[in-house]
Length: 132
Image (cartoon, rainbow, N blue to C red; front, side, top):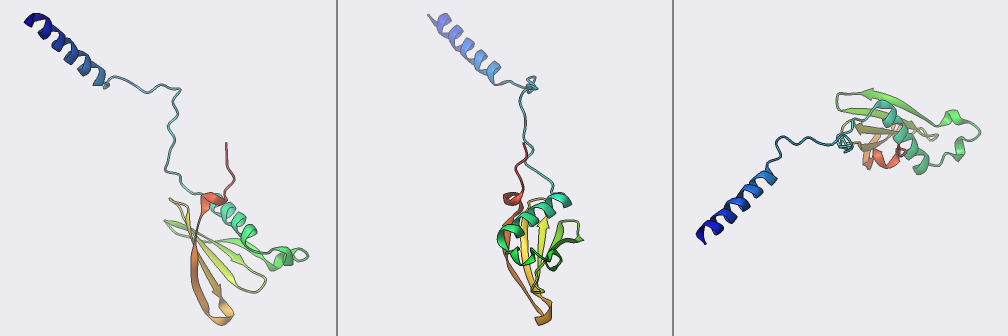
């Protein structure tokens, strides 16, 4: 009777040890691993801010004269892109796009009044077209 119990216990331990040993197992080529760290490009920063500006600001005043409102790339640092929106009122809105996360700081400036104020943030990926 002891031999049967001992054999059963040994077999159970052996099977458990083999099942958890996956050192030699490789991932199937059919399995896609999504890269969660995305790097923002200058084109992505421009596109996302452009989409945001067209949804947040009234561009109808620029219908007849598109030069009175514009969006341009500003300075680039190691960690961020700057995109600048110029309104027909003369105000500037600076968008600082973090190259790693896509989080974008928004700073509004009225040069004629010497006023500069941080007004919030937005997530760049919310304003990029979904790519399949």
